[in-house]
View 1 (cartoon, one colour):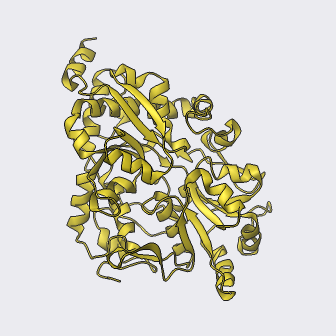
View 2 (tube, rainbow, N blue to C red; view 1 turned 180 degrees about the vertical axis):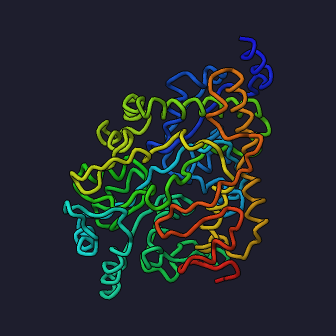
View 3 (cartoon, rainbow, N blue to C red; view 1 turned 45 degrees about the vertical axis):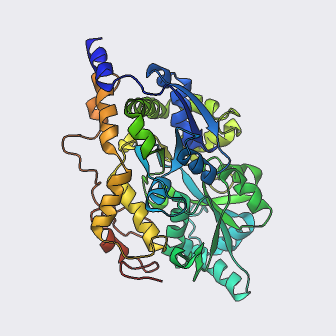
Length: 439
């Protein structure tokens, strides 16, 4: 009790108690739903309203104009907004919401065309991960016929855009460049495959209508394609980049400055929620799936959400495989906002031309530090440790943590990423702008 009283005094009373947070109907909004349903926000003296948003742009705009206090965001959104790609506003994040959780799905027809190029195992099933090498002959055939090969992603600075581009480029398919300095924000310059924005819940129906031939999106919208029998998820983002950072919780810098105690308390509640989601070796997931299936949250069938949230993933119908880390909310320090994660997103913005001009390594690092705020996270975590709610061993060692993960090697193209050397990283790709290239 003494520790708890001391901790509460250290954080201070919340400057604002009634809060409204936005989210998109995706399973990775789970930390918000669980923090609400389990009373973790109320434990911090916060009274939170959660409100589904129509799309990522509306969500970001409502955070910028103050209609929302904070929101479930694409990891690239705070970075894109802060550097002025799209609407410029200083957005920060002190909490990373999850790892992995996305997949790339193609229509049944495209899958049938890919299959002859996919290696098969002794059991007659495809050998995973399936690379875009198997899609390239299909795209080449479309080009030979003068037909555009269209695919969907959820937002220009979305994880999904960068993951889809990464997978395509690794297979020799150019996903196109942006040239915002010339007024070109379509991202289709030199493209072999034409990517465009579609809101996540509309992906399956847009593909079914034939407007796009495939897409990259979070769950449950890949598994829904399997359930509806209209498409086949061919690769998960876990296979493109193992344990990649995904969504973040974003607030405006102005809001954070005005409400520092409230912000820390929000992060505390969400850390507890993330831990609950991964506790007992994912033993709480069935209850989480029931909560998420409600219309107030994701509003999809229990079975569709459970397919990926409970440690499995179904590729071609009936080909269900164990993917225990498809959705990670707390393990592997998933909630810590690493600078190196931010820098990876910035490298992809530069690779595809969203950042039009050459930038120094220092610029990448300084920008990451402007947006990603592990200092706020550490304050929240230390309070939870002092209150006895979590153990110090469940967090990074804050005394020595630099914010940079060790060089990461688990990418589908076997290229190593070192967040301290962003420009060197850009030189390693066959397709993409080099550090000194300007379109």
